[in-house]
Image (cartoon, rainbow, N blue to C red; front, side):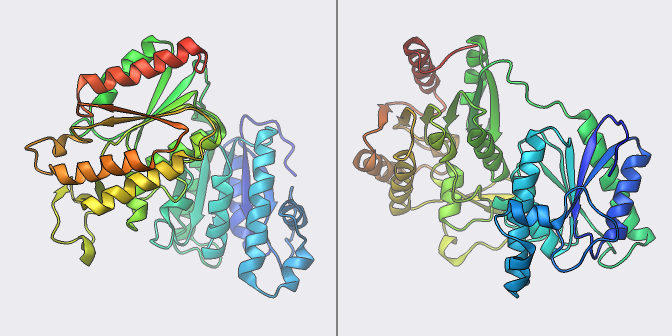
Length: 415
C-alpha cells in the first residue's frame, strides 16, 4: 500500500492475477512523477503476486456476491459482470470519500467491458482513462461511454511488457496524473442551467438565451446534442447538477428510435424528469435523423431529403408518420417527470433548414408532429404553441418568460 504524501492519487484497476507487470508499470510511472497510487484487483480465478489496496473479494462483495459465487457460475461473462458491478460501486464510494483523484483501468475486451461500467459510475470532472486493446472499436456502444472518459489503445500489450506497449502505458499514466492535477472541477457557485443545441447555423436561440440567463444570475452550459453531448447532459442531470434544463434539441431521441450510431442511449430526456428538475422542452431538429456520414445510408432512409454537414455527419428527414411517433415518444418520456415541464411548440419549424421555402421544409411533416403533440401531451406538461420559428426572437422571449415565472413563483432560484 502506498503511504507517501503526494499531491494527487490515482486508482489503478485491472486483473492483477494476469497483468501484474503492466499494472505495476503504470504505478511505477505515476509514482516517479510524484503521484500516489491505490490499487484494485478485479481478478476472479487467480491471486496477485502482491496484495492490492482493494482485493477481488472487496470488489465482489460490493457487487452483492462473492468470488466463490462468481467461480461457481462457470461463466466468465457472468463472473466479470459481478466484478464490473462491484468495481463500479466500490469506486464510486471511494471517490465520494476522497480516496482518489483519477482512475485508470487496463484491460482487453473483458477488462474494457468492466472499465466502461466503472467510469460511468464516476461524476463528470473525475479524470477517467481506459487503456484497452479495443479502444475506439465499433464494439463499444456510444451509450456506454462516460461523458468525459479518455481512451488509448494498448498497442502490442495483450501479453507482457515491451517497448511498444510501454509507450501507451506511460502516456496514459502521465495523462491521468496530469489531468488530476490540472482539472478544474465544477464549483456550482451559481445555479446551473443545462441547454441542448447545435451549431449556430441551424439553431440560434443560445446566442440570445445564454447572456440573458447569465444576467439573471445563472451559469449556462450548452451541450452539443450529437450523442456524447447528450450523454454528458443526462449524466449531469442525474447527478442533480442542474437547477433547470432548456432541452431544446431532442434529436438524439429520434436518432435512437431509428437505430443511429449517433445516440445518447435509451434514457435520453429522462434524467432531469427523474430528478424533479424543471424542464423547458422544444423541437430543435426534431425532424432529422443523424447518421455517420461515411457510412452507407440504410435502405429505408435512402431517397429522402438530406443535409450533409461534413464527412462525419449526415442528417435525413423524417416522414410525417415518423414525426408523429417522435411526438408520442417525447410525450411518454415527459409524462414520467417529477418536476414542472413546459413544452414550447413553435408552429413555423424547428431548425433553420425547415423554414418555409427552406431546403428541408415539410409543412405536412410539421403538421403531423403538431397534431400528435396535441393528442399525446400528458397532463403534467404545459404545452405552449406560438406562431413563430424556433430561431425567431419570440421563441427565446417565451423561454425567458417561463424562467422568470418560475423565479417569481419560487420554483427556480436565481443566483
